[in-house]
Image 1 (cartoon, rainbow, N blue to C red):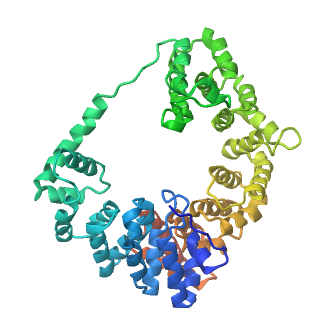
Image 2 (cartoon, rainbow, N blue to C red):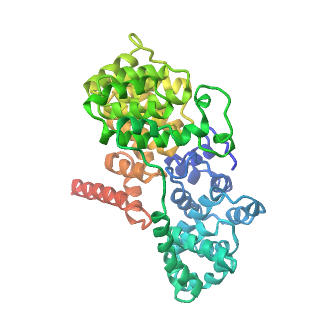
Image 3 (cartoon, rainbow, N blue to C red):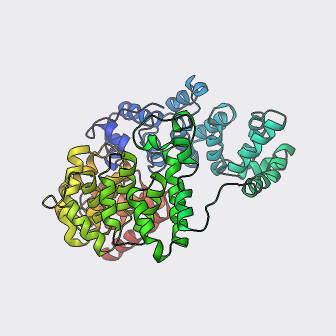
Length: 502
């Protein structure tokens, strides 16, 4: 899958790629040919780092409607030779979602394009899901034969069909086809039994019911495949993650399960053994013991986390820092303040950065300066082009702690962030810290690609002083494609505005 090049935030293409409200406003004021070209670039080369947490389809569909733009660019993209070679749904998913919204808005050409792609395209299942929400029964029934022809006759094809029916995001087409196609009816009846059989046949080794048994079990299987050398930086033996066997992720999963088992079996007299495992145990046992102590808010947990964070094994360090984020309570916060303070700890170290994130999550208003300092250091060192969870945590923390001194850096993040999810978090933080948010960023946010950001704007925007605001609120209230939460916020503001005008 290609990595799209993100244009500068001041350009029309850059604004549209980011899904910013100003992107729609600039596109409507720009040369129509230029605006359509930028729009097609966004739809055919998905600019999102993570499509699961970022929305763009409704944003782009609305702009297609505003510009009365043709769909030739989307059609060429869907039916390019690359569609036969690249089976990744991410290549066509955004374009198909945009067509789905356009079909809902009444664009007949979009509906026909979805039908054709569902019958012939590689990512046909995505197109079928869009049609399931927008097409009528007759249109779906006409597609049935073309879709079923994708499944070869015989046991293998029937098994593939059952799996497809079972995992269908929108079951409506399959329910319609079951009444006319015996294969679909049989697959629909068998699919639930396949799930039941898989659950019934689950097998696996379980730990014994003592602390020593659970700690030993934490390293069984995965450690046998990896070998201790893999965790000490030595050569990896056959059976490791490099040749398809279990890897460090498997050790993480086993250690998490072992930590849950420890909660049930550890007795007071077992604490020395757990502490020893957390200090010097093998990888699985050490992680399980550390997690158990953190979850129990053991007084020794902070010191053990600090020691683990200083180890040479990067995987153990990452695990320890993740555990630090789970710590709570006055003692944990006291340690975090020491680690995060440039005067008493290493604020620019990995431990210091993790401590700042803990303060952002669970600190008190007096921790605001430390969180803002950490936010500034992060932006200086890493920028805002990615969608890292650590930056989002700091942004949320600045808003939660009402750290008004963070407003300049929050405005920078809002304007430059490529991730619309991160921009939405910056907008929420600005709503809590920036007194000028209602008549400033909130106005632009009414056109944002994220529904949560539009809802935030509707609740905070100043309805006087900018003629565009009330008109935009009315259009959002009348748009059937808008989310219910946005409708509720918008109608509440419109009601308040009418009452004030009386």
